[in-house]
Image 1 (cartoon, rainbow, N blue to C red):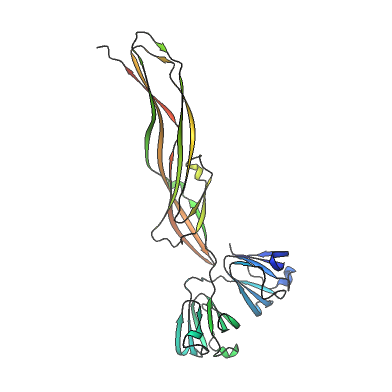
Image 2 (image 1 turned 135 degrees about the vertical axis):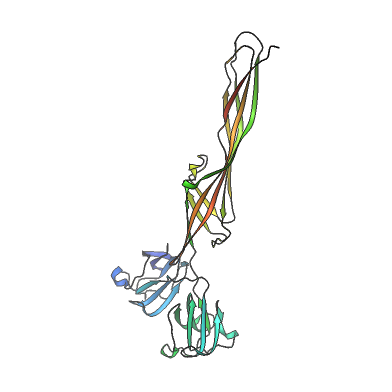
Amino acid sequence: MNKITVYEHPNFQGLHRTYTADVPNLVNESFEDTISSAKVVGQPWLMYEHPNYKGWFIALEEGEHPATEMTDKASSLKLITEDLNNPKITVYEHGYCSGNSSVVTHESNLMFGNINDKISSHRVQNGVWLLYEHPNRGGRYIVAKAGEYLDDYSITGLNDQISHLYPLRPGKASVTGTLLWNKKKVESERNIQADQYLYTNNTDSEQEFTATSCKEYEKYVSHSFEFSNESSIKVGASFTLKEVANITTEVSNTFTVSKGESESLTTKKTAELSLPIKVPPRTKIIVSFMYKEVISSVPVELKTVQGSKTVTEYGTYHCESGTDMYIDVQSHAISTV
């Protein structure tokens, strides 16, 4: 979720308000000319000096801002909803997009090029850009958005004075995953013998046994997540899958996925095996300590939200686990031949 929390005093002190959508007039929020610090989650915000997004403004990107350049002067707030990935702007030497041009796709100090103090118009292909009067983001500046055109800088007082271009950075993408249980598959399962006991009665009468055996064994659970080859989710992104205990109750009900990582859990269990008490005449009984190893997979729908853009893709959750111990008893007649 995109949000901004604004505070009355520096260092996040005093009264505060949290907003998730544009605020055209902070007077209506009883918070005009009150903001001194802010915390931003997600997309950047523009903080304006006057109501209805007028006058001087500053941009606040994702992160903590213990102090702002607009202390006790803000009157409106605007959320940047544009797609900020792959920024691109074309700047022109003359008005109305004429003369020599240059395509820029990243932050640029124009002092090191041949268009410093020569820009008079622009076209933004993607992203939101701040165009500064001086190098290193100094001096006056204007905001330039995709789809909005400024054909003549003379109305801004910055004609032939732009020396620095900065694309606003997108907030971290928010990823949510939903397990599609109706498509769960058991990839493989096998029975594994942990221990075995043999009892033989060669007599003609039933024999009674009173015997109990305890067996300690390791029970494990291994989680992993497989992203599709076409996944747009970046390494380091994380999300939480809920209700994974539907596969095994040996772990918590959630599994946090971080791209490129896996999680495993191994626990020691003690199982008590009660052996058969009566063995029929001329009979051999085999008692086996068994557990089942199961590998399951569940498709997962992934939704990535960044700004106003939502991308849906799919991955696969894998779980490899061993079940509780169980007893397998087999009885065989002893040949008298």
